[in-house]
Image (tube, rainbow, N blue to C red; front, side, top):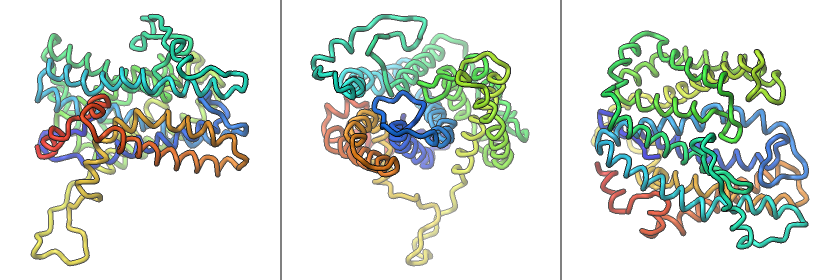
Length: 411
């Protein structure tokens, strides 16, 4: 989840902003699932709507793929600085520790509240915990090999996949062939529209392996491709230039593929995510290709060349200097290091707030606003007061110490 700095050393401020916006958007997304007519969320409102499905598709198409792509960007720079062994150790500390801690301390809460929604269920949380941790091994579900009647990784599936991909990368870098994907394929970036070719593997995986609803509407192995693309694209500035140059073409393709793919996928029936019918296969292929185009469009639109800074002596009072970030460095730094803890904390908070709000007599819109606003405020408050202020809690949530964070920022 670390924000990457490209080979030239400049800080990718737009990437920091995107990561924060995605995590903030997850609060809005999970708040909406309380009212979704299809999704089996932990807490459900008595009145539901199908509108949430239409709105959520616009987010799931690119949000989680973006987080994996950005993680791949960061992996390139982290691996080059640390080497495979130190990179693997750093990933185990920054991702593995919060994954284990949150699985024990955070993830059981939504499952217990799901049961508590039944008036006939009276088991306390401490009584429920032993049942949650009745676990069996299922290697066929790799990397989600721990399964159980009540046990789940919940929203931490992202950390499971990210840690798995990171360790696979470290193993390949240590014992695999000396292959540098950026150098091999960067020449293609000089050809107009060549970045669209990268959509083909995603289309193929989505069509043949299906889409997994529990993992935000993508195959777990499609996320590996997004991670690998981020790793490869970080190797050469020609990829960034290609995104800027081909932005309009990629955006147009994304709109066309989305407009064609979603109706086909919806028309394929209730099992469109996994069915082997021609309509479902075509719909999923278009969905996979559209996701890549939307991701590139967002990255290309935000990745604009920085304007030269105006000297202080010639700056016009009352105007922003050219090249100044849209938010101050202190705010950006605060939000950037908060991304992982906020991700870990947000879903149990949303479920807990929704557990009480759905009992109110109010329209869906009012309940949704209450859940989203209160959950956002409580999640940020929990991070600020309970996580970021001590060494122990920072370690448990995968954060650097204050001293290391400050040193990394100066670097």
